[in-house]
Length: 390
Image 1 (cartoon, rainbow, N blue to C red):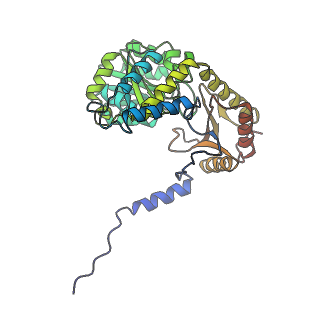
Image 2 (image 1 turned 120 degrees about the vertical axis):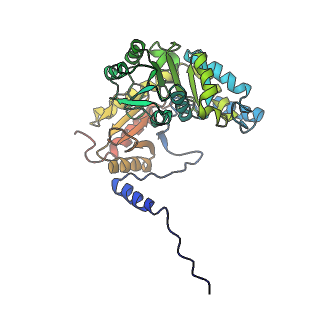
Image 3 (image 1 turned 90 degrees about the horizontal axis):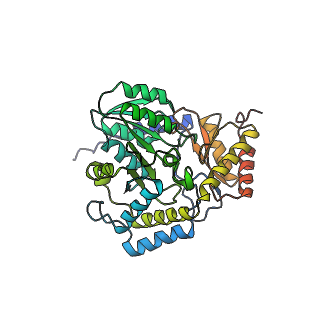
């Protein structure tokens, strides 16, 4: 008689305890598939300029897919570079004021590429405490010595850079995605110049919103094209598409082509995404007022919400962050807004470095006055106890 088969060991039993802990802390995350035509007023996405559904952007994607196919078919160094990719890179560099650009499959991949390719074990990487997770992961993967300095503290960054002899770089978001505050880029750049370090800036939330005609935070700070400055950005926010890019001196871009693993070993950006981004970029050139409109909407949201007693961070770009009493209150608040027809972001630990949960609102350039009033009214009507100071 054969021996009974023993019950298999549940090697993932530890997940049950982790799930229970998340539930107790109000930190469970779930996917909510949206329909093609959502009835919700969108203040949650990063579609700052309202271009993701613009006819020209959509047509750019359609024409690229029809001409080049559905996929890039390989890595950029094999078959994944089309004439469309290089056209997008030329126009991105020209628009933002840099010598050259390199397009990757995502903004996350762009940050990993820039940080890891420009550092090694002997390098000091100084990272702002408020930086995006992709920068944090880039620092970890670089195997460089990493020093995290207090948020938006150029003096601390300068002092840290001064302790190191050899290659160094300072890495920061231009606009921080949690509170929407801008980094002190001029002071960071001065510290880098004085200490002989490179400056790497993630301009994901600055492109299309800050600078002349939306040319970005580095352009606004007079740092675009500077020899010691590298920018990363995403094509998925203001340009309404998908993908990322690194911009900087031509020799830096050549170095990334030869050394950046997230470029070398990843399939190239799909032609449809490249075509959509290029169409949006050309539209922004023709309609530069969209950038100012996005900032104006953010200022109006902030002013009306804080005047009603809510606590919000003053926006420097298009992100308006409204504080909630707790993680569970933030989750309930966002759900109540959704039930009332408004989609808002909900940021809770570990997505927020300070541990404070909040609603995150996107100020889109295409929001009407009536839509702004509707959004403000819904947020105030659903605010949980303790959210206002009145």
